[in-house]
Image: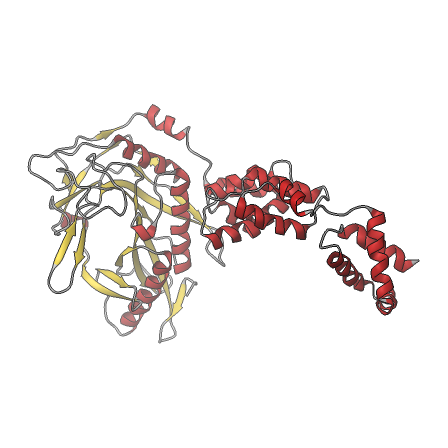
Length: 484
């Protein structure tokens, strides 16, 4: 279900209208309003300050670094940084919210506007508009044990979040998934969020409504806390089909918050959907308005890295890469940097083939990151130079690469120890060629009428020379002898 329109049982077309609210945990060693640590995987309730636990008389103190990270994200999204923003109290009552309210931003967010350019799989490039980015604190976590027992872990209470709210510009699961991928990539490039969805560092709420093409917007339902790009697609598919079935049966859609059950692949009702007035927002009396200077914002902007979209465009232009290779390389900032270091002064397409092929395959198999590998940009470049100079064949290079990956040994040393240097001496190669011709007179006659059989002769020489023969010279020798 990758298209914008789906067909109901009646045969009518229905259009999805999708907007996302992404909660991204800010990379910070302290929480938004306290100095409590934020490490993942700590023992329950071991990273809770008096502020996080809402002890009486404890006042929040804003973490300047978290504000800086929010500004970086806003600039990366090409949004407008509001020099004055306001923290407000969002009132609701859950056991994992000890204050009885969440400190967030509503009327006056840190960032207004912005955009994310996406290219869904099998689709065309499009722009998703950003409505706002605001800062807020996370709630704790309720842990439902067997029976009637529930426990509360407040380690996440007070963790700094950026809530990034899109406009309802998406029309398919594929577009929503591409948006989250691209947004996560951008946040990782900016080093403001690690994007580890499995750890809860990035979560998405999907707002979905259905309408017949050209009609007004329908009633939306919100699917909360999706922590996997795959689950985002599955949840949208199920919820779209559920809403269409109800609408075609003449029923109305209830505006509500729903949860996605990963075991059944279905959404289920959680509670009625609240409106802003239900939360009774009002400015937090313990926190004055957040006032920034344009000079400070400009200093942050001057230190932004090259962003993914810009890097893709440059790699295609500068290195003549195709869009697919550029997408693969820019999917990780370290991977792109590694490629560029190797590509300096070399055939960029050849480098891209090696990096995205053999190298990435070896990394995936060993479950290593590119920074953990024993192969450096310098050593891979040396290997490719040896191939370019004709010192070793491409086939031998692959065997050398395997040893390099496992041991970190320089390629020259491996070739010397294994005696794998390519044979390019014509007299030595001519003896191999003559031996193969003498042993296969019937093939020689066939090759004179079928030149493509030369490949078979070359393979025999490579086998006899243990892949050390220079295949280009061998091919020239065979052609010369068969034509004489």
